[in-house]
Length: 293
Ligand code: PMP
Image 1 (cartoon, rainbow, N blue to C red):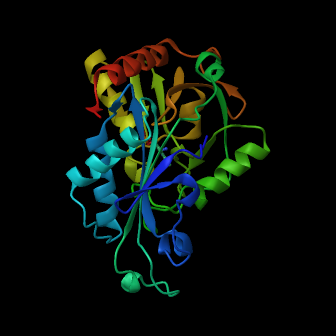
Image 2: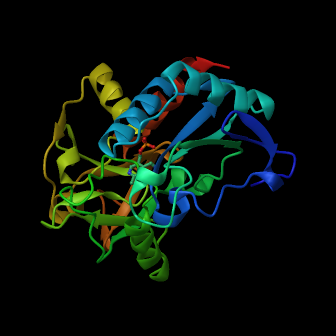
Image 3: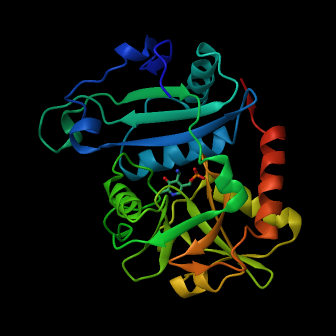
């Protein structure tokens, strides 16, 4: 929800949301030339901020976008934006665009990137999905080939995922399972996917087209502390269909159970016990960790 009293950070200034505008010549708008992060604020603490800023730096490096700000400067700006909006819990969108340039494709004309930070309340999956679990479906649109643009780059080009989301939506599903061009499972449109089968957790490796999700990383940490082995292996749809449990992870979604994929019930069709354990452990970590505002 956007409120008109919200203050948006743009290039070092706070502006009212109604005046939060960027140039039509920004290559972020003209070409989707930019990168971003979605970050959570829990109880006055920014969760895994360093990991998000590291991923932002890696995205910038991969697309040859020179960010003139240090990690500390960006971190301070993120915290300042939350304080300016009196937020204790919410969702932070951190965007770095290539900046203003001429109409040509080349970013050579873009002299300085822009940084935008929006801190708002969060619109989550409805609570009932955490209790009942999600039904998802595989869609025809494939995840982008890493040889074209690495899916590890969190870029402002989300059309690939948007197409998949629309395909799922038209069939009455809230989330889509996306395969890569080899037919292996990559991820969902805005979440990573995990299965639990015969005592092990499995998730696609990032070269299969998965974003290196920060929440995915938290799940690896939880698995280690619970003594659950994790395998990063190519997964087929069959592996998902016959799994004991399935769940998705993401900054907004946290850990959310999946109970049906492509019309097949996962396990007994109810959210799995291990998934529940991971969600409980995830929520206890967000309550304890984080960068204090
Ligand atoms: N995959 C995609 C395509 C995403 O956009 C996201 C973030 N919404 C994720 C996975 C999950 O990543 P994270 O846990 O860092 O939010």
